[in-house]
Image (cartoon, rainbow, N blue to C red; front, top):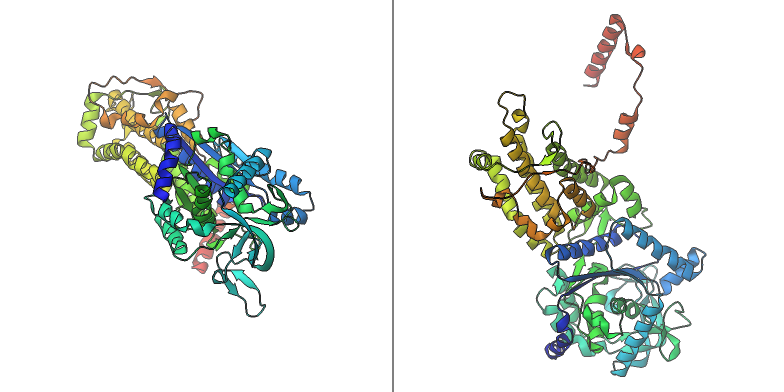
Length: 586
């Protein structure tokens, strides 16, 4: 049944195959943004930037936003003693600010309190109801306010001491609820959803496909899709029934449609989503409820769900009670927002929880961005080696000799020849950590080549000076930097832009297809020409990060020269005391 439906639905959108629509979750405004929220956004942003880089003719669209309805929002606003709409406005604005600072290139930022979204939800409800998939019934069950979901007995654990039941998945308490609600016939779509989940690369990483299939191996009950308005008033009213409000998850999921202008048929220009980035905690809603809702409404489900894991802090779960929630704005003050982007994508892997550690972040950023990448650019652009400040043309005879006689040159060539293919494969799977690995390996090879070639011995005025060979070494190094800069644009867009600006690489030559233009693929008849570096751009890409101890030592005022002058007798006494102290502590 599902195959026939999807074939029919594909026909509706076939003429729009050049679109690539990507979404993040919309973020719940019961609390301020943390690095887990930013992680979702930078995954989606890096994915979209790569798609634009690799497929420039494709229309790529990214949507994000905030989820602003439900009991938790009512409670959060009350705890802050502000009106609910004001509270939502303030927290939503903070998400906007964080994403702008992180250079997230979203095409839309949707809020579920917007009128366009309310109209879309009302129409989606009427469509489900008109197709016979919604009915009214008395309902009772265990409801988790924190998770905004009803749970079965098998999804709970009982605390014998207190008699309180808790969600097995989230650990949040539940309460028994009896009410008359509208129900969605989820049970009728179990086979269709299971078939959808099983399609190749539908759920990634694959471990989350197995989790969904395990859930789908047991009968799915019909689900409540409304709440009494006297219990949940901060929500969208059910069309035609003011006594009920739309269940927060049905409301929230429709944002992916309302962002495209649904129910206006123009939304089909981008539908279905090519990829929806979500956290593992909302897998059930996106992997079971969402495709069922869409199929019930006669719409095609997303092509892929990309599910990522969470972040711990120094090995512990982030929580307000532990006071270890990482504010991305504060973290960026220490690491810069580009540095934070790089760390999250470099250290995070979707299938397992990542661990945020200040020590680890400082070590990675200093080692890779400041030293491996930044220091190589500074050395290649140093006026002592490159007084004319040019991106030189390699000399054919010296290029051939270096590739023949210098092992480090051969390793660099081999690394660059593999760079495009390897990084493309990693980007296609959202394996950003492997893109960083591959790129850093190429830069390590470039640094090793630079050291082995010893360009400082070839400068003019020195014995053994060889300006053509020096120019060739610099050209090979700058080729490596240029290629790595192109590859890293989706991950660290600002730093990559500054790198390519410094090398005076035109914007038309920053595309993925330009990765084939380098010394490793160049023959002796190459028509490449030297060009000037950008004198207005700094060769300092990323400043090393110092911890507070380092800063204290650096900022400590030096004693005056007169005070440092000691008599021979005083210096001897000081040295003797120091030696004695060292011996004693040993």
